[in-house]
Image (cartoon, rainbow over all chains, first blue to last red; front, side, top):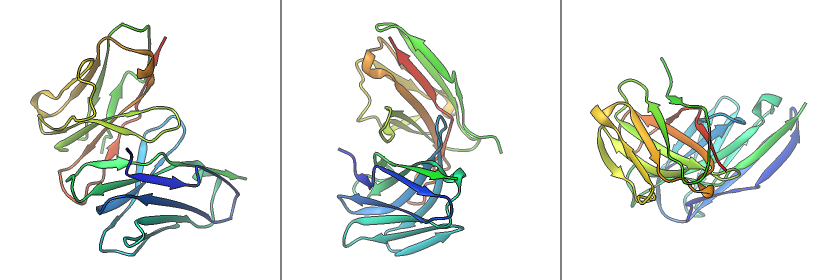
Length: 112
Length: 115
């Protein structure tokens, strides 16, 4: 079974709005990563947050991690049409060193 | 810096045929991964190499799938014989090393269609 589960499965917003995606997981983790996948392409690493971190920023991206609730969120501010993609959270569990398990993803559409 | 290279990009075969995919990781990356991504799902790890040794192949269907990484660089993934449910994108990724901070770099993938 997959470790991470993203919510919502699909999200459609207007350009300039903020997009928030959530990820829930089941077991204790070492870190959680977010990846983006454009249609027909490979995945691109966006950001990694360690289990002892609560918030991290990278450009227009903001990631939070709540280990007590076993959940993370990815916020994309001031979205652009180019942000249209699928977004996946991936967790590395404490019990499976270096093994990263991906969730099913959130499909984001940003309408110009 | 060159990225992860994969070939072919697309492959169409009939069921029961054999197929092989090739991956060239980023130079110096010791860890190499093969993932299967079925349409609408997240990538599923098939096998993970550290140099030329297998770290994890627990989700590799070993009755039909095989993979090797000779000399700890390039890798090939083979399916023999293929089934309809093997239709998917096969992604190769590499990372510098094992460890908690482990950004993976992905290739463009090979889209396999089994008819």
